[in-house]
Amino acid sequence: MIRPLPASLLFLIATVAVSAAEPLVIREGLVLPGGRRGRREAIPADPIVARIVAGTWALPKAGEAADLGDGRERKWEPIQAGDGGFRAAPGSYLVVDAASPEDRTAILEATGHGAAYVGDEPRAGDVYANGYVRLPIRLRKGSNPILFLGGRGRPIPVRLAEPKAAAELNAGDVTAPDLIEGQGAEADAALIVLNTTDAPAEGLAVLARVDGGAEVRTPVPTLPPLATRKARFAIRAEAKVGSDDRPLEVRLVDARGTTLDVATIPLRNRRPDQERKVTFVSDIDGSVQYYGLVPAAPDPSGARPGIVLSLHGASVEAIGQAAAYRPKAGLAVVAPTNRRPYGFDWEDWGRKDAIEVLEKASATLGVDPARTYLTGHSMGGHGTWHLGVTFPDRFAAVAPSAGWVSMFSYAGAARAEAPDLVD
Image (cartoon, rainbow, N blue to C red; front, side):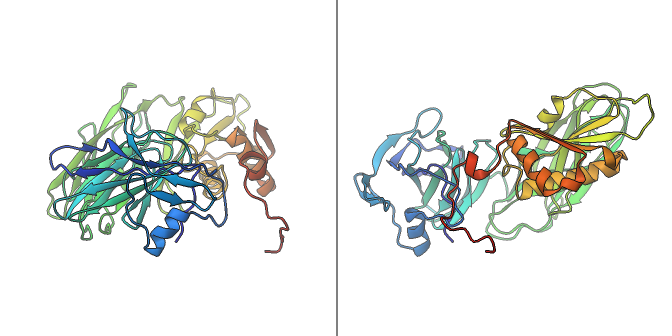
C-alpha cells in the first residue's frame, strides 16, 4: 500500500554497528533534497515509496541521482547529524542502514519524522517530535536499511537501543487520572507495552500500586511479534488529604510472575474544586481516554448544572484547555482530547471523541441537556463549526473562536475540478 505523503520527506543513510551496551546514536548519512510540497490528498503518490512497495528500491550511494518525477535531477549528498539530529530542508528524503553482525532485535528511537520503513515494512512516525515512539525492530545479519519520511522540517535524531527484556514498558506515553483530595478512587489508566521478541507475547500482566497500597493486577492482551500496544490497567487509591503528587508504581510481569520492567508515574491529588483529568474506557475502540473537567461552582438557584464542551487548539492538551477556565456557577466545563493535541482537526475520530466525551460527562454530571454549549479556539474553533453544523440539535449555542471553516480554506487541500456530490 502506498503511504500518505507527509509535508516533507527526508532520507538519511548511515552505516553503523549496533552496540549491545548502550543506545547507539547515528550521526552521519546521506540526504536527498526534495522540494515537493506535502498536502492532504485522497490518493497520495510518492515515487520512492512506490519503489519500496514494488520491491525495486535499493540502498543508494553518495552522488547517486534520483528521479522524483518532477523533471528535476537530485543526488544523494553526505550529511552530519548535529546535537539535535539530522537537519535538512523540508521536502527531502532520508535512510539509515543499521549494519548488524548477527540477527537480533533493537529498539528504534527517532523523532520528527512522518513514517519509517524498516526494509519494506512501514512503521509509525513521530511527526510532532513528542518523543514517545519507541519501536522494536528486527535487524538481520548484514545490511538493514531504515527509511524515514520527514514530517514538518524538525531535526531527526536516530538511536538504536538494546531491549531491556522480552517485553518492556514505555512510560513516555501515559493516560492516567487525577485523584481527588479526600476521596478514594477506582479508575482506568494505560501505558505502552512493547514485545521485543519474534514470538507472540502471552500471559503478560500489569500490576499497579498507588502510595504503596494494594496491588491491582490487569492482564495484557496477547501482543504480536515486535509489536506495541497501549495497554489498559486498573488502579485503586485510598483517600488522602493533601495536594502532593501520589506515586503510582507499575510493574510488568510475565506468565511466571517475573518482573520484566518497572515504571513510577506521579498522579496529581487535586482539590474537589480544581480542574482534573477523568479517564474512561472508550466505547469506540476500547482504549483508555481522558477528558479535562472543571467542576461547576455552586449555583444559588439549585438548578441542574449546564455543560460547556470546549475544544482545544493545535498542540494544546485537553487538560491545558480545561485549566484555562475558572469554575463557573452552574456550568461544568469539559475538554475532550481529540485523541491527541493535534488529532485530525476535530474531524473523523476527533469528532467521535468529542461526542462520546459529551455523552459520558453529561451522564456522570447529571447536567440539564437543554443547557449544553459548544466552543473552541483556533483548531478548536474549526471543530466548533464542524460539530455545530453536524450535530445542531445537541447544542443550545455554539461559539467558535478564531476557527477556520474548511480544509480548503486552511490547509490547501486539492479540490476536484468537477466534483460529483453523489460520489
